[in-house]
Length: 81
Image (cartoon, rainbow, N blue to C red):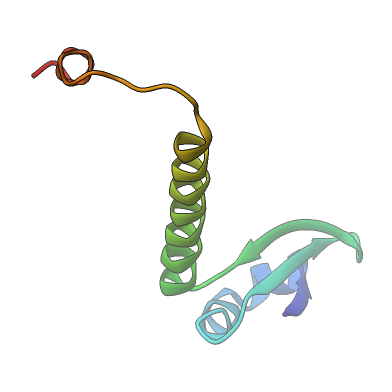
């Protein structure tokens, strides 16, 4: 990941946005305080998908570990079917 200052970002937005298409760019203020990270839309979409997949995996693991059963009628009622 590359880094740039907030003032450099303001002065060279177009170049930095182009750079962010290849790798994330960290925006710093006052030399060290992290303010933002600019990423490509594709990187963002993949990251969101990975988080959603992780949530689904954890939910499935929890469901498998639950003891007990649900009748067909209870399931239909819960799903409003």
